[in-house]
Image (tube, rainbow, N blue to C red; front, top):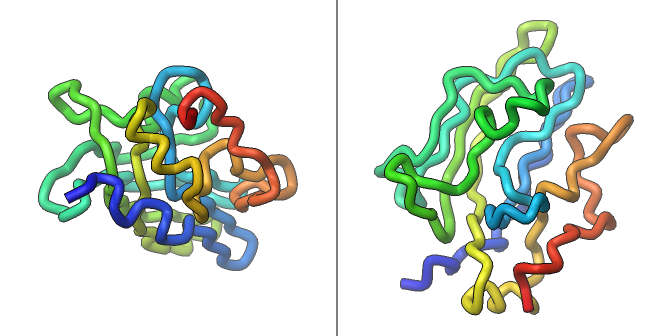
Length: 163
């Protein structure tokens, strides 16, 4: 089976409840070029805490990454809180995966956010994505007043991966 089958078919998650906004991309390219290298939720200032941020294999039978508590407000620790696409043994994961987390807002409302996304390993096989529609990347996360939202008009800025 092609590891990329089913990638970019599911929509990225855009969740809103009252003032709480969360955006989770459906693809990322962890190649160390500084663009789209980490997978994580993007949340606005109304989100208090993200609990149990877990990445699972596509079949859901293997935990690839887990953080009991996610603090997206500290960008200096992004490499700790966000997933860099590596398995626990240090090998690169490629293809579709599942994720799950609980997101609490400042009013103590709790919501479970889950979905699927794709880890794209840059190289000849990534050319599959040159003509693929529906891939939304971390670089397309909103900023300022649109924080926690997808801005699909923003370019994904990935120039080295798809050639």
